[in-house]
Image (cartoon, rainbow, N blue to C red):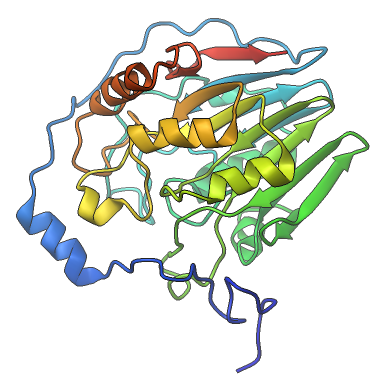
Length: 320
């Protein structure tokens, strides 16, 4: 069968892989569901009123946490949105799957014009086609995504799509570039075989400031050190802290808060912020557990809680 993608140490030409990555199949899903009990979540959380969205800065960047893995990143020359999801559920159908427990921290209509969408992988809580259609119809942004995801974005109305392999970069401007980085994860939707599309994170350099969005990832003791070695320590890292229980099932694909703190250290990030928690109940831990465990892990390592923050939806952080 003819190869669709370049053959590499993580692709056989048709499917992507991580060597020695633990596989989880349907039997494992059944074992999880029949042997564990998910902690109760609130049906709804009323967020405090969000402050006005800050304008595009004249220097550095401003990151605003919207929800789940969605950040608005504003820099002097570009506005970026990561893994946008505004739907009620992350699901192939609107009536199935976990329902959101809070409103997005930034109302869709109040988003500034988006220049670039970074889409890390094809899972429904990161690749939300209804939201992508709204963005494509309103702003016609450029989409940057790992190999194999372009068709999904074009089906949502995007006309400008760049697909990257791990460590490939796309130049947005003379002093602005996006590099796709490895992540310890996998891909699957109803429309392609498992791992038929690549996944990853994004390192974004904007002038003298760098931001790193890990995407969904498990912990690996060399990957994030390698990101730092090749691309430099980021000024801001966006790192997942939720969807990690039970560990026997989730560890390969989702880091827990203690591992998130180690990622922060491995990257040498000047500032980190948490993501992938508190919006949808995807796994067994309680809604508050990731933030509580993050605080404990920071204290154990002697790291200031200001160095790795869990922003409220709608809260912004300026990095100069």
